Amino acid sequence: MPDMSQLMQTDFLVIGSGIAGLSFALRAAEHGEVLIITKRSPEDGNTAWAQGGIAAVLDPLDSLSAHVTDTLTVGDGLCHRDIVELVVSEGPDAVRELGDRWGVLFDRASSGELDLAREGGHSARRVAHAKDTTGREIERALLLAIRSHPRIRILADHMAVDLLTLAKYGGPDSCFGAYVLSRHSQEVHAVLARATVLSTGGAGKVYLYTSNPDVATADGVAMAYRAGAQVSNMEFIQFHPTCLYHPDAKSFLVSEALRGEGGILRLQSGESFMERYHPMKSLAPRDVVARAIDAELKRSGADYVTLDMTHLPADFLVERFPAIHARCMQLGIDLRTRPIPVVPAAHYSCGGVLTDSYGRTTVRGLFAIGETAMTGLHGACRLASNSLLEGVVFGRRAAEAVQTAEALFPRQVIPWQSGNAQDPDEAVVVTQNWDEVRRVMWNYVGIVRTDRRLERARRRIELIREEIRDYYWNFKVTPDLLELRNVALAAHLIIESSARRKESRGLHFNTDHPHNDPLYQTDTILHKDSGPSPR
Image (cartoon, rainbow, N blue to C red; front, side, top):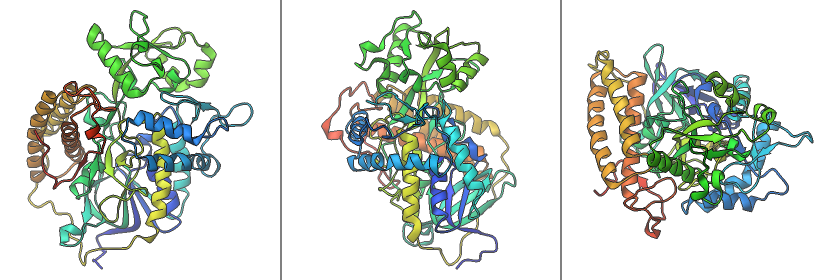
């Protein structure tokens, strides 16, 4: 065993504090000690920002087969059917547990049954929700249970730097923890664990405009890739069609549930337009709606389209969407009497670290769950409100799998070494590269792509990554530098995956290859030793 005097050790290390990580922790604590690290406060992740709800078959008139079919249809040929069936079948019990065991207060009808909403791509009402702040309510309840649990500890303001692997010691491809940076002390410690779980959320901050919070910097994907794990389907970035367009809104999400309750997308002239793009009109899947809005904006030169709710009862809108109503009113927009200006923004990563049906990655001892993972559930496009469902189902399944995890540590753990690294002296280098990565990705690897745009993005991102590598090795690490390093690597992976897919499918639309091609009805898998993609 290594000298533990300057190390931290736990049974299960969870990196991230959203629905997936917290669900895992509550179950895994039945088998050992759990340490959760989160780079800011535990409430700051994507889960707390989720508005619409969590999808599951909870109505006797609905069916598991219908939910499976809807998921497969939206996934455009790339969903793993076995995973879809598994998640859909386990979903109802997982959602009931959130309410019955962990105290999530879902909205209920006068009958006492769950009040179920319908969202884009769904053929029935099956979305359990808590007004329009479902994620925040789930986060509240799970954190309340976590904080009172004697075998779970949370370290806020701690950011994982890189994973600890036996491969660095000449051993097998196995993970035994992570190096962790304290935001306050600026010290890096080694945390050893029998199993390490990545639940760090998505990659929204790779793009200039996103509905995600600032913490969504693809940390889990980047660390897993550097550790030798396979990542998959990174080209499939979901752009949410309706984010509030306002200079002070900071891409505030306008939930898909508004369209589920009858909201109509219109041009600024008042003309509806979705009927020209899909038979489901404003309730079409997100990829269709986002591309339609993008096309209309480019055609007209307008800055935004509108989401019209004014034909619905005013009292219903305030009751059903209190947070969205309040935010709009703060900005001078009364959704009861005026259409909401909206634009698309990067929202969800359908790709991620490749896992099996229990969240295991291709590196022993390393798990990935939630948005960080590519389980096969979402395929080429995610069905609305399947994300929270995936997080809670795989949190539970990973907790089952880690019961037998072995403690595989090297004889002596190499401590973090800063060497001759200096304190950062030019923060402008980091901020400039941050801005450049996000603008390149938005302009060249966004809703609509071309081969030429992808090649331009590839060249620019590689130059930026060279600068980041030089800076990383010459200056002491900071949270901003670590996030930039991860964002730039995620950008590289998205570009590489996009370049390999010579077709258009789901969320990946390339005008040079505008149709589905059966040759590409397979996952895009990248590994750090797999070499560059073909030019």
